[in-house]
Length: 150
Image (cartoon, rainbow, N blue to C red; front, top):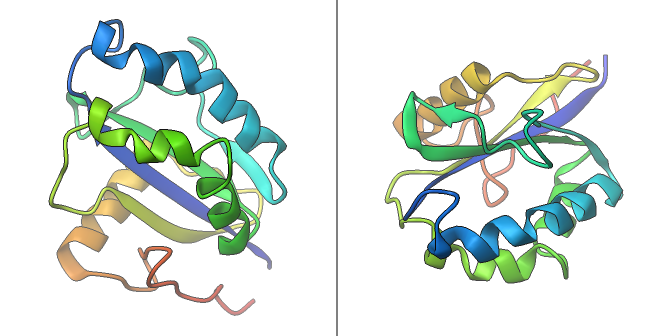
């Protein structure tokens, strides 16, 4: 069995999505998502059917937390996209749109190839990371764990 890398990251919005505060973020969503879709090693991303992203999903039932989830072939593919020329400028501006949270906001975990994680799966993995730190069940790009053995 082969495995792919699932990732989740959340953000607590500073204002409603349709507010002037969030305008640049929302205006850039299509470009950022298109770059992900075209990236080497990209497999899948969560979409809500309401547009180009997944802004309709909430995390832990909190209307101010939005979620991004995707699946990648490798950590290197994810890293290349995250720090690439299209996504990086938005990453650098994240404090304009999202509150700084002291707890972990990003978690990674391995899923069997072809499996697509749910928001509930992501909530569980981020909780594990927050409670136990990086483990094989939930980790980060800075503290990676290898693919499970087939």
